[in-house]
Image (tube, rainbow, N blue to C red; front, top):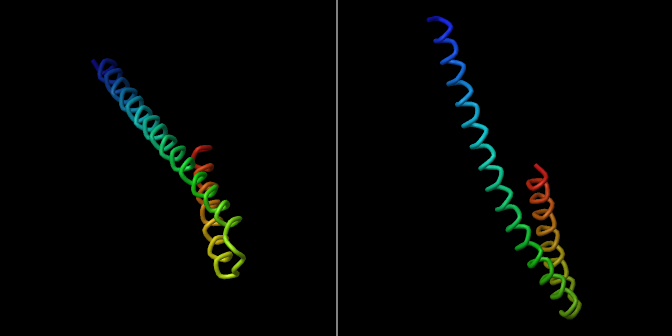
Length: 86
């Protein structure tokens, strides 16, 4: 009887491990999808900012704001790339 109890316990542990593994896989897929979509949005933002930077008259204050926005978008893109790699 003791062997059956140990086998049942091992089966339950294996099922729990499988359940946890499936949850982690689902979270990974969700995170990857969100990171991919966010990266696409950042690429559109960066492209628009670069076009604006080329079209506005030179003004150090505007240039500084655009540069800061582009740098922020680039940092966001690097972060999403790390998320996708994970």
